[in-house]
Picture (spheres, helix red, strand yellow):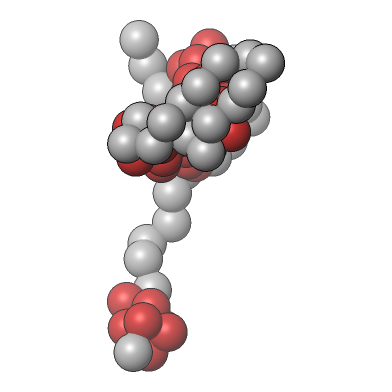
Length: 85
């Protein structure tokens, strides 16, 4: 499968990774059930939702063809370095 939009593809992967990490981190808390939700229930639901939306964005990047392909530009290292510091 060819990547149609690099920007959407990599942002979707980022969302899936962050959502999966967030959901995994929430499993350390008590989840409870639907009637009596524990402290980990809401973060787990948000992490799963973010990972699901990321998978939709990634799928869209693989299927929907764009006019110019939405290439990723070069990384501006100097401003990034100053922002991090």
